[in-house]
Amino acid sequence: MSATELDTILGTRWRRPRLIRHPGLRWFLTVGFVVYLVAAFMTIEVNWARVYEGLDRGAKFVLAFATPDFTSRATDIWEGMIESIIMTVAASVIGISISIPIGLGAARNIAPLPVYLVCRGIVAISRALQEIIVAILLVAIFGFGPLAGFLTLSFATIGFLSKLLAEEIESMDPTPAEAIKASGASWTQWINFGVQPQVIPRLIGLSMYRIDINFRESAILGLVGAGGIGATLNTAFDRYEYDTAAAILIIIIVIVMALEYISGIVRARVQ
Amino acid sequence: MLTLKKLVKTYRTGDQALKAVDLDVPEGQVLALIGPSGAGKSTLIRCINRLVEPTSGEVWLSGTELTGIGSGALRRTRREMGMIFQEYALVERLTVMENVLSGRLGYVGFWRSFTRRFPQSDVDEAFRLLDRVGLLAMADKRADELSGGQRQRVGICRALIQNPKLLLVDEPTASLDPKTSRQIMRLICELCSERGLAAIINIHDVALAQMFVQRVVGLRHGAIEFDGPPDALTPDVLTAIYGEEDWEATIEKVEDPEEAIEAVG
Image (cartoon, each protein chain N blue to C red):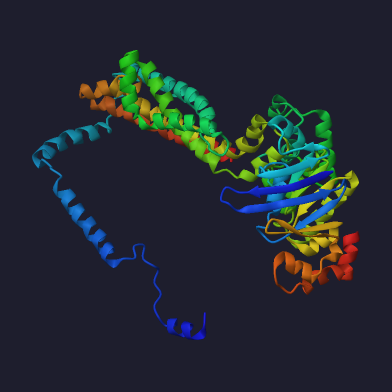
């Protein structure tokens, strides 16, 4: 830069270049956003009289947490809980074992294109269908009960875990894998030595997280008849037994927190 | 022993990384490949073991043509070519021993490697190599616990346990400090002469290359610009390879008596 050019710049203010250069467009977008926000708020209809009535019921529900009733429906809660845990464990084991090969196939850097497309297709289908919808369909096919819940959770696990595993594999460091390949390793040896050590901590972390999600989902799936603690919870709500419902929710919260704690320890250990 | 005939690599982006390279490396010769970044040095050595597929041309390794062979034959040929990498390319979460033994993967079956039950002769050889590079005590450490120089030594062991005929060495010292760089270069060259290995060493540091090798090949824009002994590298030659710059200081380094002694020792 010549001295004269520099001289003209010295002393002028410096500001970060704007994200949107054109001032007209910038103002249009800002004003448009505010107008939309105001308009959107005005379309919300609140029946304040209904809210006033409902507050009473809401308060009862919240107060029930102060007096949770674990005893009067103890057997129902126990059975529902066991069913949920069995559903969670079985669905996680099956789902994770199916996810691993699909995850390998869905990673573009290690799978040939046809395999990649098929595996990505499976992932896309599994992710596109919401759990509740799958559960309703499977309840229609297999009838009420935990089998439908188990299948739903396995199916959802595949979409979740395969996708994230594939993304982890795609973002791994390619040079160690290249070095393993250069030694004359076969494909399976290459995966075992070059890829697996790089992704295993993340796979374990994700699996723990998925077990956690599966347990929480198993409480929801009961609402559509797919078994588990959710069925017991639904019955409690239907009978306005808020204290029993509170007891169930407290148990769910405690188990989820325990899982979170355990997964924290496991993840720290496998690093 | 290794012969490249009219080797061409054109990347899908249209960049021509190698333009009809002809090169002949006799048995036991250590060759330094120099040239500016992007000259095609890495591509050249990766085309030899087909980590990069050459576009056309031939690669002959002791009587076998490599560009046309199938995946099984390619794996068997890769066993004969050990590779050493710039950023060491160790699998960080595996132990030093596992990293060294991974050099035997081309020789053992999947279950043996999966259960880490390598043949005793391989294990013994791994210990011998680790002892040779002074890392015997580190065998059960995880690779990410080692320093840069130590990691590169493990990388050297991994390449040598393959029992190769040829070493492909990609910028072995680029991530190391000057002293460690010399130690690593000396180690590679010593091991090559001990075992009668040929080697192609990609290297940025011209002075370092001159210190240790018998032959220097200069690459520019994917074509060989210079091929000769290290002392034939004059400022004119370096200008031809790298472009205009004052080269006197680079070359003088070698003539420094103290360093010349170190190079011999």
